[in-house]
Length: 277
Ligand code: G1P
Image (cartoon, rainbow, N blue to C red; front, top):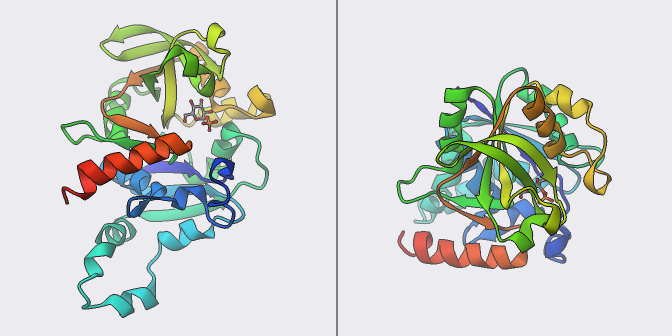
């Protein structure tokens, strides 16, 4: 059973400036819901109800979002607009939220290590809210699919998708032996390789299930790509000493860390989810 999910949300979101000057990028709305709420809903659907945020300066709006807004609720009581708050109220009622600040921006690995005391000594999930994942036809979210893999194999799992070769430099990329359709045992992993050096075109997207020994691996990981402590490097150690699986998920992922991906996600959610009610 995986109960906990960690959201590293300390990043600056410079690609969206000036929108993100005074507002966390995770609060950008895709139609009428902030990005981070989609991620928390996905975690809740996968059975996780303890949500940890690695946050930073200027990110208080995220904590406010996952808290009741007493004055607002009083104001719209009985006005017919109450149902607009139903989805967030449900999350607030059914989950616990904890926040920890990352004082220095030293990379995703470092952000995850900052969550050691929130996550404790148990397997946990990590969601990068920039990656918006819309479930496949059967409605099963990506994290939920990954939990099933974890329950079977009991080792860390990363979600991957095939990307065009000219885009691999934006991602952590894996090489692996295919154990069964869409499931790979990782043999190599490189953070943002040059397109021509990538071991494959299987790119890691922002969904991970990590076993708690990852924290010691991160501690032993020197800064890598861009001088940052990379989770990809720590996972490679886990893969070499034990096992890490890469799972080609079902569903559609939008890179909402980029303007193009964000606009595509907005159009998709508007047409396929919002308009259909
Ligand atoms: C991070 C990870 C990278 C992964 C990507 C997915 O990079 O370091 O391995 O492929 O998320 O979105 P970032 O996009 O934060 O630079």
